Amino acid sequence: MKITNVSCILASSPVPVEKRYRTDLGWMSKYDNTYVKVETDEGITGYGATYGTPEIVKAIVETQLCYLLVDEDPTYIERLWQKMYCGARGERSIQAAYSMPDYLRGGQTMAAISAIDIALWDILGKSMGQPVYKLLGACRDRVKAYASGGWETADKIGQEVQEYTKKGFRAVKIRAEGKEGSFRIESSIQRVAAVRAAVGPEIDIFVDAHGSLDFSTAERYAHELEKYQVGWLEEPITPEDYESLARLRAKTSVPIATGEREILRFGFLHLAQQGIDVLQPDLSLAGGITEGRRIAAVAAAYHTKIATHNWGNPLLVAASLHFALSQPNYYLFEVGQSSSPLMTQALKEPFDIRDGYIYPNDKPGFGVEFREDFFENYPFVPGPDFIS
Ligand SMILES: [Mg+2]
Image: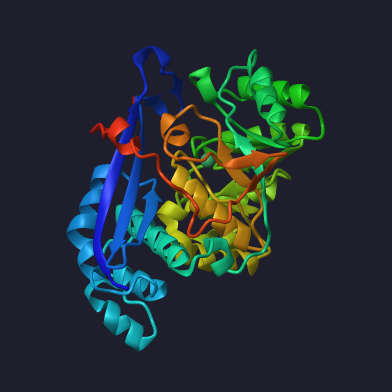
């Protein structure tokens, strides 16, 4: 089997002005999805996805990486990952048995590599007639999931999270700021208290600050959260400041989670060494499933758990699910509760989520099929998704 073409498909769903609201991330004007399509001479097509910036990823895939892949056997996934990572020195690095990465193999380029890697695993599964998680070496047949939402203000957030527990979730994540419009420890803690009161003592609660706090605020905030049995505080401060994350971890009993903006095993090694409790790679940014396995192995060496960031793209959710099913140190699976039509209108079959777990189907590859009219119905809209 040979690769014949590698291309991107972009999709958007604008948010009507009257439905927009502001969070610490800004005003959301639209939802975007970026897909990679890898075609072969045997008629098998693999799909990948990334959380990277759509137009930039498309340019990297279609003007750079595709030339490294056409005419290659798509089932040689480690080889192709190395070729994409090392560029023109890919062949030489494989012969030498060590990496010689090309310039700028982070950021958007790694997002593009990640999406292609995911598509190659989809092809491998389809060509073998097996779900990807079995090819990765299955560990479990379902994964415990949490509802990821919690944007409402203190007077409404109890009701919001009760909607999630009614769906069967036994764990919920809320935003530290949400729709409040600004972050204050007192009002954020009122929201956490409202959630604890609404769900009772048995439900796990997690809080995500999106890397938006300074150190002293994060320290005082974590101290307050200790009273509410919070399962983790996510991205309390900027995720690249490894030393401060370690300092914060030493000052609080609340577990610290981070990693959705981190890439490659080297970055995650730093985080694991700082005592971070839960590493959260986004497989569509950090290096795909191939690198995700290496990251999970690094984490396992520090007895650290993995809980991938699975936001906004149904193919990423499917790829992350297969990864989660295969990794012994996988902890909890994020199920986004946004109302994005790109999540609800893309696939022929919805995900099987019940009793607080997400289950795979046993179809080949990632087991997903797009609705025929999906890409026509959601044409790409240029420009940023969040605006200030
Ligand atoms: Mg997060």
